[in-house]
Length: 444
Image (cartoon, rainbow, N blue to C red; front, side, top):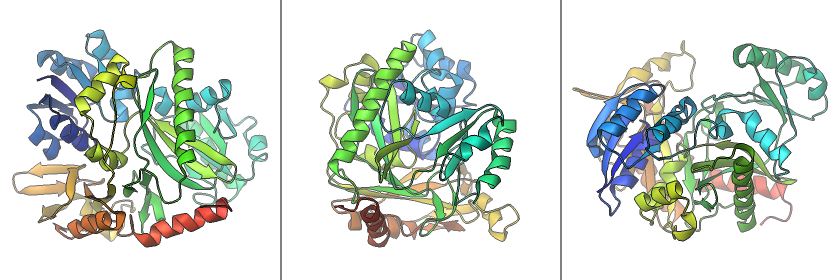
């Protein structure tokens, strides 16, 4: 019965906790959270609250409970160096060191790594620490994307055609990013269909999980502002309707080369999750970015399907023995729909914004699974905060049934809530397939 420390308090960590405790090893789970997630708390032997920058407190809990290893959920503690602090204390972790977490925390690190080692899939880019030469580089690209060189919670990317319309309008945005972050990345705008490929990595070997498609736009039909993710889906054949098998293989190969390049560049083995956001474009597969942890909501799509014992999988990542473990996922489809406050993504002066502190009630959700995110459990019930509240997941043999399970469960959540009813539906997926047909004239 191993002792395991889980760091994090979102829906991603809720499904991580669930997957850990169903292990045949019957682990004892200890959780370190910055906010009390009732789902994680119910699965844990002990919960300690605190900030993710307080690495000493995290190490103290790990030592006190004599944990065998830690699993780090979100990016903030990775950026704070919690894996380094645990390693110094002799405690291994599933998650990269602060230096290797630059794969996510520094977009320029990743782009430059691909460029230096000739890894395919890179975008045309340049990193600027001042406005010098920036306008001239903008002029060399048909359309552009600008982003800070750092963590942005999935909301810092500014895209021409969405957030601004001309190169001239990009200039003040770049200036503001430079003032706030010190460095700005300017890239070519890629056009195509995105998918998420979350890979397990022990530093030498890479194993892919089933691909997922996330939906970041707040409103139906991909309208409105970007969010942390309003929901996602995966298919029973471990593809997506617009993907070919060779697209997945190309994404895995890029990830393998990146893992090898990180080892050559830093001297360290990357032991954790390498989650690539990829796009299929008219010129082939391109890398949008890497994250150094599981996705949220994408973890909720793939971890319930995991057939391999998760404790064994974590141990293989830590020990560099992924090649000796058969990793499998059940052939079922999943649909995740996030319940959010009505005011989520809206300006503070909007009448619905006050819904972000409202109480919600959870009724009979049938076969669906619920994963708590930004909620506050009080004596008189469950309250939302300003962010995503609950991930509702349907799992079935067919995508349509999984979508129906999730959608029906949403109706059992009462309060001033909203969601995207179109995620996982045939209408939205057909739109993706038609878009791919335009991009790849020979599709399917």
